[in-house]
Image (cartoon, rainbow, N blue to C red; front, side, top):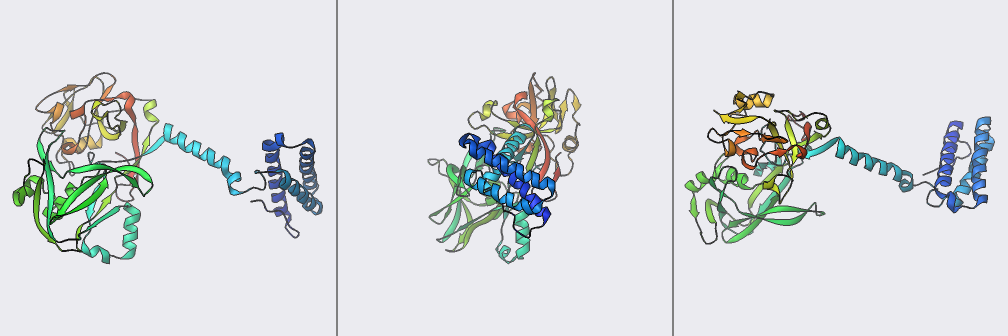
Length: 424
């Protein structure tokens, strides 16, 4: 807001305010000249000239009076332009800022959040942390620091009845291998993020006695590992859990119930866990306009032109393995390109030598199973996940067109921790 100079103000303050007043007058003439009569225009122009003369002459006693006169004229003829408030004073700045943000995101750098753990341990997707009963006693500042670092979403489900906890399980085929396994069934529902933004979520149903309890999770998050760790221990599979427990199959319903042997009383917690978000990256969208992607680089790409994702296009991150003309194969859990082990980056070396964290190497599945070879056609690229044993990638759905590649990851900027820094 414009503040008119007062008697007793120092010359420097008076000069600053007079310059602001002239700037406001010029803006009124620029945007409202077509609405003003010639007398009003002349009065404002004369007022600007008088202030300039007083300023040049260093006559501060007359400058205050001239400023008051111009201020009165602008209040009378300024409309929405004068007096200046936050909205009309910053609208242009806000529009420029929005335009620059859109331009930067479109052409230069874009943020991207890792949705799954197919690139683990290089990049982390959403993970979980079981919250124990003693979490409530943790130091207040440790809790705040954890929230700042991870911004996790806490989920708690309280039992209102008593009985044994049962988990529904459904047998399905794994798209990436054709094997059969069990998963906890869910339905996809429409909901609102933060109560405002429309989104979709997974809705799971668990049982305590005869009572049903619903758990909502983000669309990309599976509850299976949470339940396995909670009731059977970390690293357990559903096959092992079924072998330990009492599984009641129901062919008519296409799923069965796994009795966990755990009993709850009314008022006790069925589940209490935290969903930790995936790594957030800045993606360089410029480099690939000037050069082709290189084997060994991790890339972000759209799935619009990949048939397997036609109904639900999204963005993926994988590691580029094969470029046009390459012949690829997997042998002894190593990836070969044109007959040679591919060692074009630090991560490729880690995977091919089964370094710590990458001990599974490359798994021969899909189009690269059992000594099969793949030739990469022109204009196409072959990509694999670093978590080769749990990655739905080019082995199963084919190639990535050159036009679908958006850029390469630059920096992990969130969460704040050991993974913060340059992408690999």
